[in-house]
Length: 71
Image (cartoon, rainbow, N blue to C red; front, top):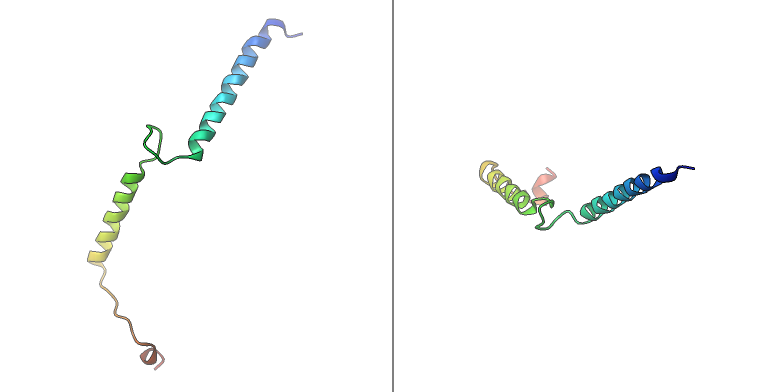
């Protein structure tokens, strides 16, 4: 019924399905050192810098013994 138009349709559907498979494989393992992976090392360095900043600029709180806290 469709004739020759079936071939391009099948190729297009196959291309789309292989693309979805590739996207699924990338989402399954987003961390690593490939070009499309998330920069986990950079995220960790930024987080470390933020924590060090907070340690320097927020005063430490001294613990109050439990017997004094109930007064």
